[in-house]
Length: 110
Figure 1 (cartoon, rainbow, N blue to C red):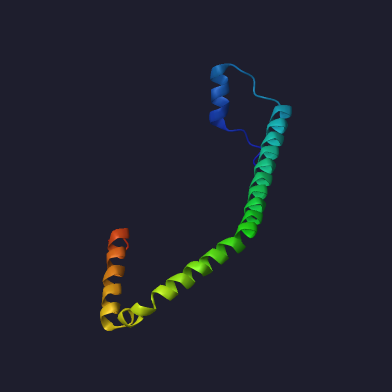
Figure 2 (cartoon, rainbow, N blue to C red):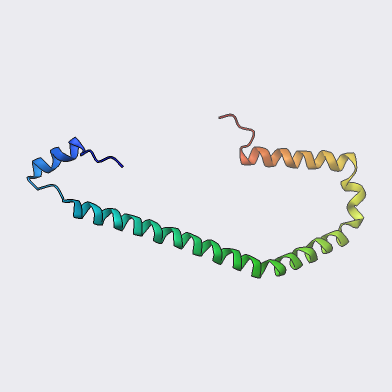
């Protein structure tokens, strides 16, 4: 940090006819800023730790339900497998993919 005084700030204080704050004020202000930065950092760390623990607690249930859904879809889609892997199935999936790309704007020029 520079120890030089800002000329614009000096001009503003001169216009207001107020004395410049002393070194005690500047030191107290910098200490408050550092304290606020530490509090914000600790808050972010606490939120991150809480999110990790919540994710670890919920993840087994999510994985089990995902496995059940995938298993159910696999059981019900056995009859449609030949249609999906046929050239017509690939063509339809490409059209759907192209529509998604257009819809999201991924193919637009900026």
